[in-house]
Image (cartoon, rainbow, N blue to C red):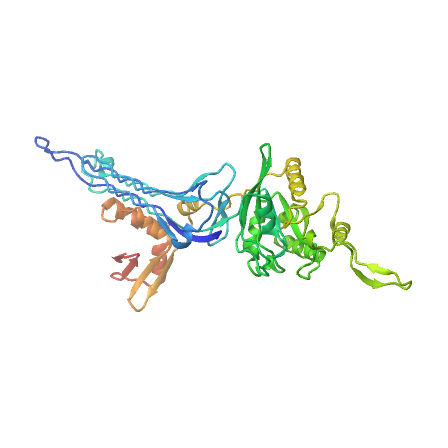
Length: 443
């Protein structure tokens, strides 16, 4: 089974708090501050692992968190850094922000490692705050807050060539007949549930990667069946082998099938619709050797059905779209088809499809301009202040220190929060609650 899409919650480590302590040694009566800095919180890192081919690991575990940095110690000892969490991912994984769908990173091409979330910085110990006017500072800086991101991982297969077509036309059989892959092959009326990959080896070091894309159906681009899941894998292909049932074993018209599949490709993406196609007219071993008589003309002569392969050629072949009659059962025509595809791959200059970054959670979290909310809770008779900016500020402010509390008051004033409380009718002695902290208001 190929797991190709999942959602994860990622959390970096919080920075360790700075330490407050003073040098205490015999014969050193007035030792200065020696509180050490906190350790850095662990990062969250995405890394391509060549041995990983699916996202199956992440189907069973959805949350990954780096560890927090440790608090600084006395004697200027720095706290231990938190451990990074590294997520091994298959090449070709596209990571998107779950809320917006914007691309964060495409682990393709030269991008094999990406730090998606930075750990919080370690807080400064009180050794840094000594001055001529404050020789014994009793405060230190708390560590930077952890960061959280909810992301979607999408695996878009990296294959030179994709095999497309309706279910049961012989796509898996073609992959099996031309590569080292061993997919299940049968005349199913449904479809393979996951793509399969194989390597076509033409000898003399000539090879390419071939992917069997599960059978598409009408409405695939609108999400019918598993259409969108399958179409995603075609985006990186440079050439498509479009397999048709030339013998019409299932009773469908192969020419109509061709146009219906291409309608779905065009509805999904113009880029996908413009990928070069080579047509494989399969199951020629099931076409009668002698043409079938279908009618009699006025002169009493038999009218024979048109040869199916010739009809496909007449209807679909162009200068840029070749038709190859093949049989996956006997192997006939497969070598010629694959040799042509390899030659075509060498002729075309199509850059690898890499999705550009549209969103960086690390930057968005640091430079956020989220609003705040000031409300009055009648049930608890409290004023409540909420919002990401407030929560973030509390994460790096030590309210137990005089300097930290002064910064907190300044923040409340400069950001208009005190004005909002006044508009709501706050009076001296009323309670203001902010993320677990309760304050009495005095003007």
